[in-house]
Length: 376
Image (cartoon, one colour):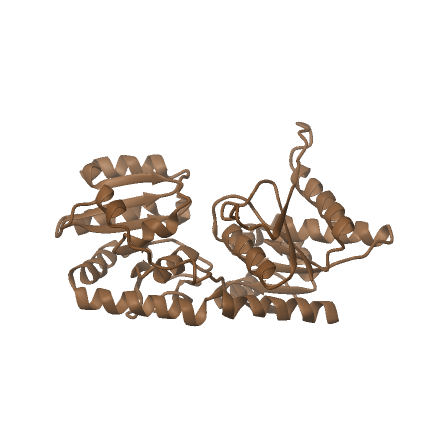
């Protein structure tokens, strides 16, 4: 099949999964085309079988809002016409499914081959745009114009149906990892850069938006530091970085926190870590938690959204309501101070990632969906 995959290039779960899906489909013999405003964060240079098509957005100050949408629709028309795409797979309803719908109308109107469209919902398009009365009907319309719709968790599927007037069936196909690539690769020299032999290494990875509650990460870590030697890695960039820095200073843990910034080698950093913190207010799936588990890192996270479908409470980590900072700290202490518990959770996380969320299990589900869409 000729498959066009539309995604955001920025750091985030949707771009990661879209890039991995493009690569895995190419490895399985399909011709994949990634269409975005820039090269996606995780699209590796070695992915020679994946073609990237950049969306060039012109600058017209008077008409700012629709520029990317119109440019993307036009690029989809061009790529579809040049490569006769069978499928356009839009990751996010707005603006990507909207652009796919517009591109299909243009192609049909000019007598060209019209690809089928698949829309995958990742969360923000439902929890923010879909919940806003200014967008709700538009988002629902674009979802319903797709030939098939998926959500990355049962929680997100249910939220979509509850918050929006969507008529389409929504199939749950979870996010996934290439577990031959996402696995623990110990590096004693790298670990020695960040902590001493007697210290535990705690890590948080995100785009540092308010929903990620980076302040809670810092508060949990400060409680850990009161009881055992530990260091914290905060990996990522975002609007909450300044607030996090201020709180780190206020709680007196500046000497024990490393702000890493955006990092390409996430697997390397996870592989030297002992615990992953994710106290988010909302997560439609929690891909970073899955990445941690695949690398043998137990997780302490919020019991919200799709996270309970990824992190099994008491088995691969512990889950608490987002405001329960003290309880998260206690759970973190249990894991970090009990070697046997840590080993059991680390092993269970790796096993769960391989059995439920491996590319070899999930990618064929997308292939089957594409085939049903083409047959329908």
